[in-house]
Image 1 (cartoon, rainbow, N blue to C red):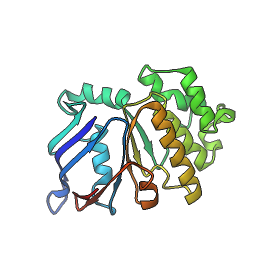
Image 2: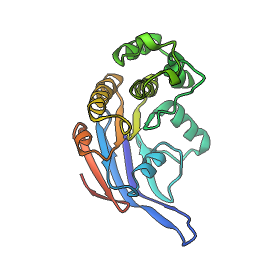
Image 3: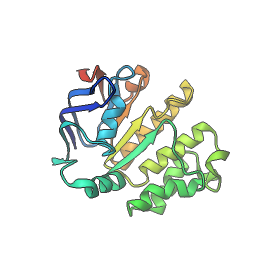
Length: 219
């Protein structure tokens, strides 16, 4: 469902353009999972932002079900961000003024796919059913990350993009949260592209790819 062809991306600096991605080729089949690995500065997060439609590549193509992501202008990109993807970041990015229930439902309501039964199921599986009336500041880091995962999956997106989703958790919590995320992703029917520094966590996904100096090193 996701095909990346010869993707290049640079950023301007005082010393001239900094090449971050240097001709990336990747394929992600529908319903599969891919761990994106590499040292800091290798372009992992940049690639994730391009797939999310948060930035534009200098050249190359990102195809979603055969259609170019950037071929239909800002309206199509906004629709893709709203309806096509779910985002999970290390920083959680919950809305502090909304309780857990409203945070969970937020993305699904934007995508016009709010399903109370699916949301209740997610809350139960994520251990949040007794916390729905609490606010983010009243939750532990692990609980906040579970809310972020539930929010991302509430709309059953075609693609889940996760950038170090368990990076702020201890090893045991990381393993538990990732296992639960992958189970729920399978039930939602989503594909997963996850950035991680951890070989241990990457091994839990079906496929792995290493970026080195902006190029695919191996898989």
